[in-house]
Length: 183
Image (cartoon, rainbow, N blue to C red):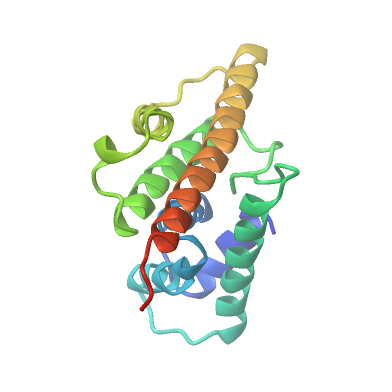
């Protein structure tokens, strides 16, 4: 699934926010809640709708995006990717989408129950603080090699950072569940 395809699905549903921001929300929710986040994410998408269009195929596409993203986050081959405009799009558009993805990710974490990053493990806290910084960045007009290289480095940092956040919080959830005493 690509950015253009998911944008088209969101437009069919009457959702004003774009694929990058919605994917960021999805990833934040997955980090916070794990596999149980699908319903919460789809509910958040529903609240963004400006029309009451019924399109079951579009909802199935979003469910498929959820399953694909969850599978990528679990994949030991580190196949996780951020849903951003294709590389043939202008750098400014891609950079803006990256900041929107970051804003969505932070919103998804909070909506998933991770409202205070100070209580997170140190590595996760540092990554989320970096994502806060990136989410507030403004893109400037360097479409040349230095701009492309900086963009690629940020995307790789975010990609690996989100995998680390997901794995760390998943391990914490698993530890919390194994600490339960069953009578």
